[in-house]
Length: 327
Image (cartoon, rainbow, N blue to C red; front, side):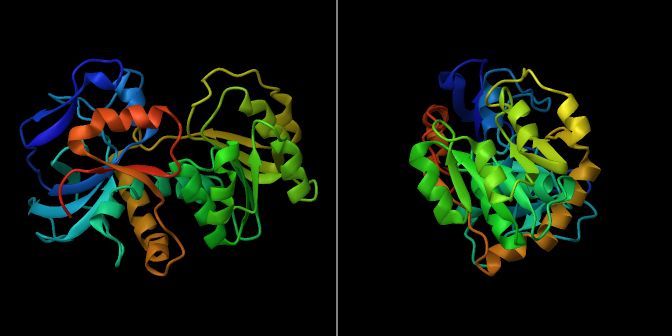
């Protein structure tokens, strides 16, 4: 089968599409013929040697997929051959076939093509888990979401809207309007506006119940300023750097929580529980029109290096999709 392989750590040029051995499903697993996937920031970090993936003979990136079950392993009753599934995985999704635990696979929403579904799981599961399951955001609450035009950001905006929560986002000037179109209550140009003041204004001085941050770095101290008493900062990325100068006393005064989280590092049991809950509570939102996957561009698997280079420009709004096969 064909797969995008990291042949050495560095720029996009280290990626090669080549033939690699096909995986074999074990008990409780399914083999999926992948139709589509998508890029995530973690793929870029893995390519640079900064975010190690699972051990494998050939290092194949890719954290999400959509496709059809081609083989059901021993003991699998949940899926049949030909079923359309999607989901998250620790790696190896940028390949024509992959193996995943049957209970970690999620049904594709009715009316959603496999080509679109390939760009759905990672950002919507990340945003929902961070905002709701860990952050505790509820109807009537307020979220501050950084990088509102990113994949996670566009998902978070829509989830807040579906939940009935207010959402303030930060974005570059050219992306502010798109965030408002997706349902953001306020969209702040981070280069020219003070988002702490905007959050205070939007909440009558109360602050945000949850801050969803993919930036890190110097944002941490100001996130605490924007936070409501009893609020939570969810750190899901470090695009702005992993080091920060932070007034720790602010957490004490606000009785706040700072939580760092990733999906890849979780146990199989945790991933299965998250996938099942996501299927029950969020997938219906794509079927009733409350949620949509925002796709900026599509690339063929053969053009994976070009897709990585484009993501590094930070020009995209939403997801960069990857067509692995024809839907």
